[in-house]
Picture 1: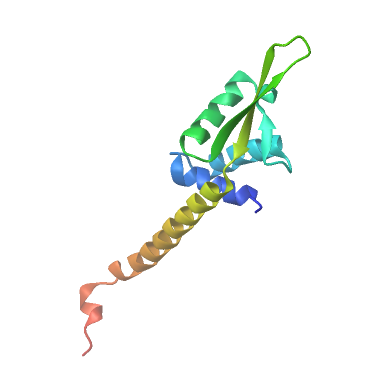
Picture 2 (picture 1 turned 180 degrees about the vertical axis):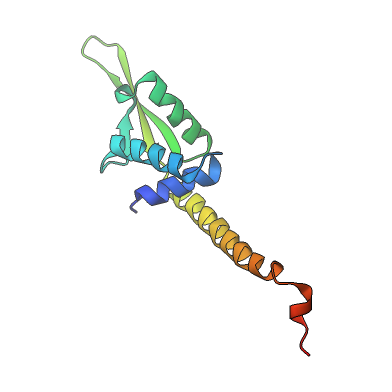
Length: 123
């Protein structure tokens, strides 16, 4: 399953109260970090970048994982990862797509409201 920039941007726009342009910037940033992978190591994030990841995790678009390894001196070493939740992202994208289509239909219906009442009746 592949997540495109548009998929993630639409998912972000549907769940976070931001415009589509901002959602595209956030989606681009996230996908730049992930590249062609489904998960990334947490260490590559700056503290201010992590805030966006926490928001996306809260919405279910990102998940966290951790691995524990015993190193040579017997101590445990934990590695934390961020994982794209592709199913949720695609579900939210579809929700946003439906909202956008409904809005287009509503906007199209507005044309009829501008027509004066007397023009609706035939003579």
